[in-house]
Image (cartoon, rainbow, N blue to C red; front, side, top):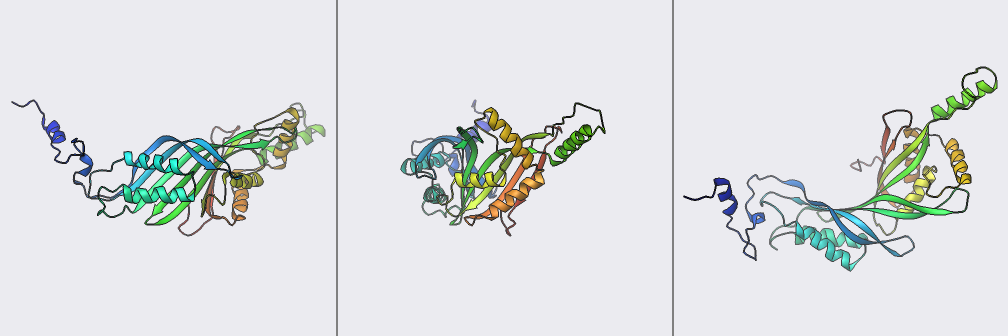
Length: 310
């Protein structure tokens, strides 16, 4: 009597072998007949070279996500090829528009099991990394490193390439309503209209984040530093990396000059992003991690292209 269970028998009964003689379940027929939007892997770590605005190459520890659109017909894909091809292309060139073109074309063609198979319709590559830029202090003539969480993403849709850059930008937001009420109280206290408190009131402000995604035609014509400069222009109260007392005071003054709700922040971003011709499309979300409330304030705005970024 066989000791093999029915479920084990199904696992062992694979008629297709790979070149080493091992069972190859990827080649088995698709039992469902259903397309899958994305199949692949994420959190694959790899050091990659990125070109900065001054032309130098900087190596960043990167987390890569790689996918293809998988049509009905076969059971699965050979996922190791995704990062094999990524490593091969990363060894030949730095991250660029050409790099995305090459790797996404390879995903559509070289992920096939047979040359006679049709090209995969779509391929995707997303690269996550931290990018450091020097940030000058506000007043003390010092500087520090500011780190930005960034994503570079490429999509190939039947030969059409789309490129996206996302930057997370941290800033301080002072509530206009709270600022107004604080000044109203200080005026009333100085005018002897109230004896409550000690004559000083502090408006609530908080660390905040803008997550901005832009669509670009060429990622070597518009760099991370270019986008950061736009964000600094729109929202000048960026959190600081190097602070002496004079810088702290200057930051307090800067916040008082730029009070903002999430509604103000998104509209400021809209004006700045629409001013740059190299940006095809964009979407921005902001979140203020409230110091007064136990909930957060959020707003989302986009360029409003028909069929554009959501």
